[in-house]
Amino acid sequence: MRADVARRAVGLRLAGIGRTFHNERAQSFALRDVSLDVARHECLVILGPSGSGKTTLLRIVAGLERPEAGTVSFDGRDVTAEPPERRGAGVVFAEDALFPHMSAFENIAYGIPRGDRERVRAAAASMHVEHLLERRANTLSGGERQRVALARALALEPVILLLDEPLARLDAPLRLALRLELMSVLRGGSYTTVLVTHDQSEAMALGDRIAVMREGRIEQLGSPRDVYDRPANLFVASFVGAPAMALLAAASFGSLAPPGAETIGLRADAVLLSASGESAGRVRAVEDLGAEAYAYVETPNGTLVSRLTGPAPGLGENVRLHIDAAKMHSFDAEGRRLAHAERA
Ligand code: ADP
Ligand code: MG
Image 1 (cartoon, rainbow, N blue to C red):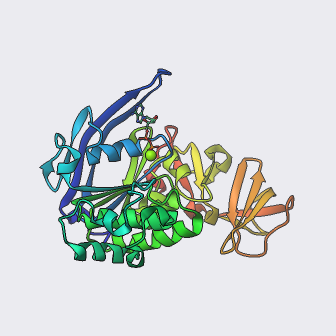
Image 2: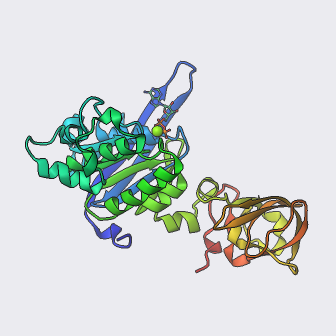
Image 3: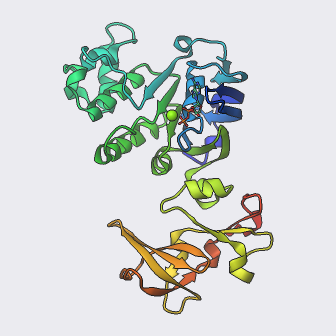
C-alpha cells in the first residue's frame, strides 16, 4: 500500500498554508508555507513536538481555523472558504467530545441521516463497541469513550478523517490495544486520514507516510522507513527513534567520517560491545526493556548507546565498542544529511 501512494489520486492538498499567532508575551508562532498532498485512502501522520503547529494545521484542514495564506482542497475541490459542516471531515480530538447523557448509540447516530441503524452498527463494530451501544456515555471508561468517539467519526463516512492525538489520554496498555485496532481500520484503505501525534512509535505504526514538523514547518515527509533510516537533518534524527540517535562531532571519527561531515549519528544497533572494539568507554546506565536492552556508554567523544546482544555489562564497567561504519549517519555544518553517506 505504501509503494503506490505517489500514483494514487490526491485526497487532500495543502498548498502554501500560512498562519501566525501573536500572544500577550509578544511571542509569535507561524505555520510557514506548509504544502503537502495526502493520497486518497492514505494515512498521513503529522509528527512533531508540542507547540510545533500540528493542531493548528489540523484545525485549518477541518475549517475550524482560517489560514492567512494558502488553500485547502479535498478530492480536487477547493474548500478554503467553506465552513466546517460543508467540508465533510470527521474529527476526533484527544479529549472525546461525546454528549455525556446520551447513549453510545445516540452519540454515534448524531449527525447521520435518521434511521440508519445499520451505519451506526457497522461503525460500532469496527471499533468493537457494539455491546456498549445502550450505555450512557458518562458511564463508559476513557478507552470506551474514545472508541465511541472514533466510531462516531467513522459513521459520518467522512471525505477525510482528522485525528488529533486520539490515543494521548489513554494509559499505556489501552493505548497499544487501540493503536492496533486503529491500524487495521486506517490501513484497510477506506479512509483518507490525517493523524496528529507527538509519539514517534505511534507515527511509525500508523502512518503510510510521516510528515515531521518543527516550529510550523515540515522538516521531512516520507515513509516511516525513510524518516527512520534516512533522517533529512539533525532535528529529525534526534526526534525519531528510541533510544534517540547519538550525535557526535565528526572530527572524533578521523578518517571514518566522510568528507564534509560535521556531525555523525549512530543508532544503538550501529554500536556493539566487543572485546576487540576500536573505542573504549565506561557504562553509565543499562536500560532493560524486556524484549531489548541498551547500555549507555560514556566515551571521550560523547555518550553512545549500544543495543545489547549478549549479557548486560555492569554499571561503571569499562567496555570496548565496535562501530558499524556502514550504519553511520552523517550531517553537514547546517545539520543536513549528507547524501554521499547513503549506503544501500
Ligand atoms: P501542537 O498541536 O503541535 O502542540 P499547536 O498548533 O497547538 O501545536 O500550537 C502551535 C503554536 O501556536 C503554539 O505556540 C501555540 O501557543 C500557538 N497557538 C495556537 N493557537 C493559538 C491561538 N488561538 N492564539 C494564540 N496562539 C496560538
Ligand atoms: Mg496539539
